[in-house]
Structures are given as structure tokens and as C-alpha cells.
Image 1: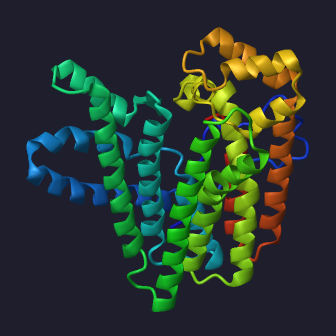
Image 2: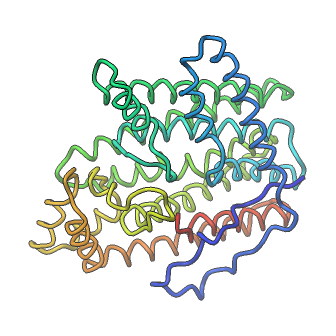
Length: 381
């Protein structure tokens, strides 16, 4: 059985850059079953906990349904990197516990998304109402007592906490058959992944409270909230579970830092220029939330007085309309910020692919990792 990389039409190179230096996107032959197993493990694990919740009472049904509607699908990039991190270290072989570990990462990510939507006050995610919005609106429709927004936020915090605890259960299960040293090493990596993600999220929130972009902090947000969390630590978790040596784990870290940063930079561009029908999230949200991304930092660095005023008036303005967002997009393009970020993505992708080329993994894993990185970088959602 072999895992699959994401293969969708939403992964294409941007038209604004030459792609002559980039690889063709390689299909992974007969690659379907590992990620299907991840879906099965996630669903089975959820059903067990849902049964317990139902025993508490029928009032829990809406929360069960909310998780059920959101627990499937998604890109499953973190799961795929974990699976190939394990197989690469095992020269293509399956590794006991790798599916459970990949599933644990996905449940952790669902918890992070539910909480992140509360912090960002987002209304939609993947084309569905966010959890806090769903329950706030339900509160209003039912005419219940108390503040609807506070109720929605409270339920979302609870739902996120449940997913977080369920992910921890699965992460522990993944090492059931491993030796003590491996269990401890995996646990250390799992713990570090969580702490880094929390820390990166706090830095991101803090940056939205300040008038100017801190370049050093922006770089650390890129590293910890996205690069290591999305690619580096999932690769390391899979590799550690498979007993990878220090040189391969170091290669995985380098892939994570380069490809992971490119992934987030692409996310930042999509957050402002993306098609809502493809991304499932309004392209105006990041601007209203005041996210101080590399895109914003580079624009501020090159902006003239009037352009700086457009950024200052629009960034973090909850009442920003489409006309104001269009002006901000014009500034991001006129200052060269978009082109510089696109070029940075190209450079980072090439660096990551070079590390994969030299990594001591089997050819099938090398091809899979190459495809995964390319799909991360040249996506539209």
C-alpha cells in the first residue's frame, strides 16, 4: 500500500512567472491507499468518541454533527508528509503506526483551524460556516437567552479542545508497538510540534496589534506557525517513527523549512488574491484581520507616502470593503511585493527539491516528496 500526494487541478504554477526552471508535476502511480486508511482511522476514532458524547445526552448531537461535517477531506498535506517521511526512512516500506500518527496530525490540525477561526473572527472555512458562526447563528434562530456570539465562541473552543485531546490519543496509539526509545523520541517531536504551532500563532496574533511589521517576527511566524508545522515536523514524526538516522532527519528539517516557507508564502498570496470559490475563504479576510505577512512587509518597505497610507487605512480595518481591498491589492503589485514573494517561492521550492534529490530515500519516496512539495507551492487553494 502506498500513500498519495494531493492531485487536483487547484495546483498550478502562477501565470505571472516563468516556470522553465521548475519540474513537471509527476503522478505517483497506484498511490491511493495510505491516505484512505488515514481517513478511515480518523472517522473510526471520531465515531468512538461520538458514541460517548451521545450517551451524555441528545443535546450533544449538534456538536457531533459539526465535527462530522468538517472532519473529512481537506488537503491532508500534513498526513501525506508524515506517511512519506516514514516510508522514506524505511526505503519505501510501510511502518507500524504511521497511519495513526498521520491521522493524529490531521485531528490536531482540525482543532487548530476551529480555534484559529475564533481568533480571526472568520465566518467561513472550506465553504462551510465556521464552528463559532454556526452555533452563534443557531443560538439566534432558537431565540435562546444570553449573548449569541459568546455562546458560539464557547462551543468552538470546546469542539477544538475535543479534537485536540482526540489527536493526543491517536499520537499515543501510533507508538504502541515501538520500543521505548522510539516512543520517547516521537513524543518529544509531537510535543515540540504543538508548542511551536502555539507559539507561532501567538506571534501572529501579536503582530496584528502593532502599527508596523516586524520583519524578524514575520520570519519566525513563517518558520513556526507554518514551515515546521506543515511539513518539517510531520516529516520528522514519520521519520522518527521509522527509526530514521540523524542525517535524514536533518534533511527532513531542511525540506520543512524551505518548502514550508514557500507553502505559507503561497497561502499569503491566496489570502489576498485567491478565488473564494476555490479557496473556500473570502480573499478580504486576511486584510481585515490585519495579518502582517511577508507580502505586507515587503510592500511597506518599498511603498511611497500615498501607498503607505493605503496600507495603513486598509490593513486591520474590519470595515474594509471590496473597493478598499482592490486598492490594497494594487499597492501590493505596484510596490513589487507580489513579484518578490513569487520569486522567493521559486527559490525556496528549488532549494527544497534539491534537498529531496540528495536525500537517502528510495526513488518512489523521492518522487512522492517531490510531487508533494510542488503541489504545496503551485496550488490555488
